[in-house]
Length: 257
Image (cartoon, rainbow, N blue to C red; front, side):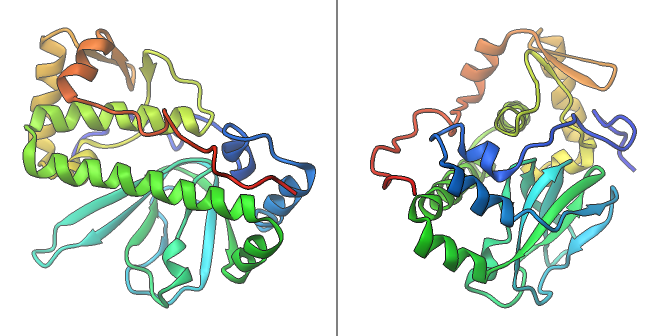
């Protein structure tokens, strides 16, 4: 088994960020909108690290909001290998595929102890009719995730192993910031090198080699289960990293109710 890269105990960084907290960063939510979102999170469910929340191709008509912890979504390939397609943090909404498919396209597993809130897909219809701005913001979240996934897929086909590792570190930190987790030049991604490799198409050995290169070149430092970004500007330039949570144009949103 690959050694734990930045996992400490059972938890990643602590955050209690709900969907309303996430969306309120972009627009000032009305009391009615906050109440509507709170109803999506009134059935919290605790899951232990390593527990599978949903199996690939399992029947499901529920969506979920992450309240605490970290999860990941993956698919199994024909050769038995695993491709991680998404990491989930507090405030993330996932399993939107339940709106159009009867089966889950991927497996969702807890990377740390976590709390998720399931809700019926029919509640999305209620948001669409009674709170169109909230429904529009869910569309925004979905499109940001689509662009982030596109970036990663493009990187798998055209960038070096070193760039993939650097980009993943920066992307994880960006997601943590959105989740309300306090991160600066030092943060704890909470993954094994094997899990990192499964997200960017590398073996654990290759991930370790690239991390050592980044350390040797003075870009990062690993210490006490954390990653320190020693020269963030250079790391961003080398990775060609674009923060997809910045530069959002939400001027088209309808008014809140």
